[in-house]
Structures are given as C-alpha cells and as structure tokens.
Image (cartoon, rainbow, N blue to C red):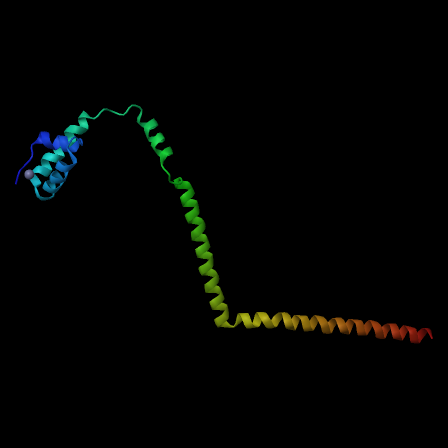
Length: 142
Ligand SMILES: [Zn+2]
C-alpha cells in the first residue's frame, strides 16, 4: 500500500490534486487509518491557511438570501395549517362515526320532521281557532 505524506494530504484536502489522483486517495482513505489521521491533520493545517472571511454575518445573510428555500417561519405556518386541517378532519370523521353508531344522526333527522309537524298542526289549529272565532263573531253580529 502506498501511503501518502502529510503534504500530499494537504494537497488533497485543499483540492489541488488531479481528479484521477483524488479517486486513488479516496480509496486509500477508506482502508488506511494512518492516512486518515494524516488527512485530518492536513485538513486542520489547510483550514489555518484558508483566508478568513471578512464580515461573516454579511456573508451568512448573502448566502441565506441566495437559498431557494422558503423561510423557516413560512414552513412552520404551513405545517401548523396542515396539522390543524388534518386534526379537524380526523375529529370530524371520529364524531361522524360516533354519531352514526350512537344513532344521533337518525334522531337528528327525525327531530326536524316532528318539529315541522308540530309547527304545522299548531299553525292549522291557530288558523282554525281564528276562523271559528271569526265565524262566531259573524254569527253574533247576525
Ligand atoms: Zn496510508
């Protein structure tokens, strides 16, 4: 096995290697712990050599504005809306099932009919009463 030197790993870490060589280095890293340690050291070494980013917050803002994602707020609002909808649907389904099994629905459908009947009978009674009283008055006036 051909081990690589720290300098070579630095080149690998900083992307200075030829792509063909990189593949060989990749494979070597998979099987060689010694070189993995060297590689880690190389990363640390190259990180120190990297130019520092001026004004990191500006850099982050710029990066965030370039991201094609929706803001976290929008996502959470959408998620809450969906959760509410799902919750209401499940609740409605559960209530429907409960009402159907307990026979409340059949009672609900009969109640308006009875109400309608009562209303109608009382109305006709009322009209009948008024008519008879009117007739009585007409009879009296006669
Ligand atoms: Zn090695």
